[in-house]
Amino acid sequence: MTVTPDLDSLNARALPRWYDEAKFGIFIHWGLFSIPAFAARLGNITDAFKKDYDRAVAMTPYTEWYANAIKVAGTPSAEFHRANYGDAPYEAFKEPFLAGLKNWDAAAWAETFRDAGAKYVVLVTKHHDGFCLWPSAVENPKQKNWFSSRDIVGELARAVRAAGLKFGLYYSGGIDWSFNREPLRTMGDFIGSVPGGRYSAYADAQIRELIARYEPSVLWNDISWPADERHLFHLFADYYNAAPDGVVNDRWRTVTWKSKLLRFKFMRRRFDTRYKDYIAKNPKALEGIVPPPVPHSDFRTPEYAKLPAISAKKWESTRGMSHSFGFNRNDAEADYAPFETLLGDFLDGVSKNGNLLLNVGPEADGTIPTPQMARLKSFGAWLRANGEAVYGARPWTQAEAVTADGMPVRFTQKNGAIYLIVLGSPSGSEIRLRNGTLEGNGRVLADESPVNVHLEGEDTILNFVSPLKGEFAPVIAIESAKSVS
Image (cartoon, rainbow, N blue to C red; front, top):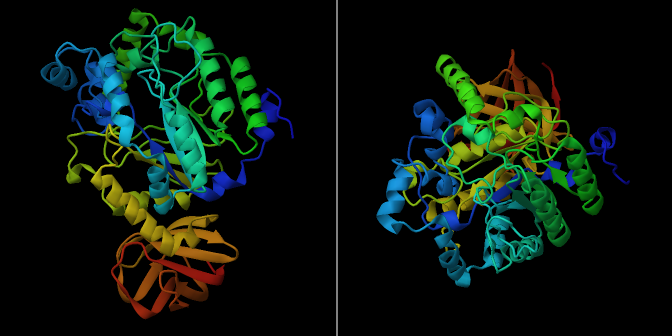
């Protein structure tokens, strides 16, 4: 069915089944910023805005924002850069990065992601620094040859597909520091920094080039889009017609007269005064990043955040394993979220109609850091044993319950079975479930051992023939289950 560039046609298009069923994808932030691999350490990104608003954009833990951070005098990044690279510009990282690719193996990455249980991979093709990981034929009028001569995007696309996974791409449409070189400090600066002039035509030409060359199954834009809705809807229609299995995310807010006002510094300062006051009066206002709804998207993208309830709209949580997406040389094991936290958040999302796009931040030479590899292997082991409850599953009538001893429980369903996932490490022969009354024939997915499921008053009792041994997140499938709540 041909898609036309209007909202009725765009919004009538069904979500491709593969994306809904995939549940788990890998994000990759890798580029010139992977050489310095440094950022300030104030906590997570929202902590930077709470603790140091006047320099927050230069103080985030995101190493991929290094090119901006070193422009702001006195920041840890600026001090680190001067101590280690002197007066060298950010552009000086290009040749060392390209030279370091000699041992990078796209096929090895793809196998790692497949073995981790991922079903799709989304590569950052151009981040805010404007550097392109493919040999673009679209000339950057502000920065000559600001691209990789090696086709990193193409090599990974082929390897990912050879491993049986879907391939997608990220593009920073709203921010490009090769076009807008001013130092950014505040939220007002950041929002107002979307380039004008020739940038809109440049971004449109590049993303169309990416679509034509690599046929991505995911088109993941970031921040905003530098054109109006008419041009954007034409882009969406052309993309869908070229990639029938394609999906687009929700970070496509277009330029309006209000957003253009923030190109003026006095308007930014007015915005910052109000926003800073709002944060001070609402300390819980910034808990992760949840982009506002847009007229058309296939899925929403909360960042370092979760949705509280089952969502009719498909969504995809995205996060790094630590506070950064790009590799941070200073991250120790303690800076990475435990596997149990990452898996628990993933399963919470699946129970509420979400996917997880879990980020990998490789070192400059393509090495995946040991703490990240360990977590990928743990995901793979859990999903090999319990993937039946995840892949192709849908939310049940309720997402959450709790055991009598306080362990959270999440539910999914598929093919007549209800899957009960305990987000804890229970042991022993019995679990008593509050807030959900079920009955049916049960089995533990990990070993296929039987579970007797029956009611005692308003509680569901699960008796295990083979006692649980304290492994994290056991899954019980209740066949021909029925809720009697």
